[in-house]
Length: 286
Length: 286
Image (cartoon, rainbow over the protein chains, first blue to last red):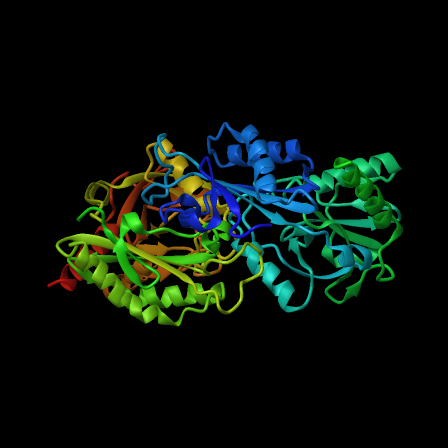
């Protein structure tokens, strides 16, 4: 990666040190925007169409009109290319807000154009964590009730993730009404007697793209998936637990708070899923 | 007001057209910030100490270290002065975010300084609405569970307020678990048989400063206040309803959805409170 990096802002590729946002941007005043993070394996995007489809859903969910999402494929490619990130694991961050307008809660007029910001970054895999498993903490899920929208209302996520960092944990599992929903920036899945359990898609969780890949792999391997939420009080009924996410890929959870999961080592279901996932992502660039 | 106006950004008073934010600002990525709006009556701030105290609580609530809140009194005064807004009703908007740092959910290091942005604007009273009352709609309260923190996670507020605008209503009352909490940018209070009822201060509502002034006035007038949440299903048990806020001051609610409140006209309790409120704010600048 070269510095200063080149970023994408409102139609232009510019040097990062020249990229500025108006304080009137509704992303700055109101968290009035959505985002996506796409992983590029050796220059090739993984599940780009799924990310763009989810971005469209998020935009629709908060009623931002931005018909040019397809063009973001080219933006991503070019950001990877310009910043010379095609030789390994990289990511593209894309954020679309409702644009800049004098501050008022109601949506601005139709002449206000959405702000589009994108940048590329190195995104090395979490090899040690994927091999050995991680420790996570659990906290009450205090987020809003439209977590299916990938919006930038992430203050609760940052606060809850920060608590994990301060306890040398890798993530924070979120618990709403006694049930695990997901984590601050990943989905969470449990395994009992060879069956995968996870919160069903609803307004309380993000429909994870890596999670959907796990479902595909499970189907192929004959592993049953039941989309039913897991009670935090029954954590010790499960032999395996893992988180999924664009950056995390598949990471085994060895411990939740003071509870060791299974024997504290990555279990057979998690390892089988990881192996297949590695094969799929390995094939992208070959 | 002169254009371009002069704003305050990170210690400097600058022309608005030179004010820019880094896209790395955590206010832009994560809604990682808090804000206040203070009203100035003919150049004099109303309840400045209460606003600063609430700002401190908000900063503490999300763990932003910014010890210089007291200096914001001077910032506000100067913004009013420079922009020649001392001759009527004006407002100061102040926003503090955790600052600009490469995007990662965890808090940045101690060398990252908070971003501070402030601007002044005309804030004329809602005279017609205060005299005649307003129509509001009600919607499910989908916000996060730390609404006592005045954070910039306002996407749900904007979405829910926009719905009111599209129905020519003035505000949207929020209903959580069947109870009115507050509105998208005001508190809501009801009156039954001369007694004021409103949601108690908790993590689900903002501790309103205008509401606290109403409590003071009620005490003076011998009007009882019971901090108990009102069931939306019992709206027609109440003869009066009104919203309070820095901008709204005290505005009678004549209709919620299709339900007329009382006889659809501002009631005696609301009018008595308005009269005293007007006297208090009238005295500030005299």
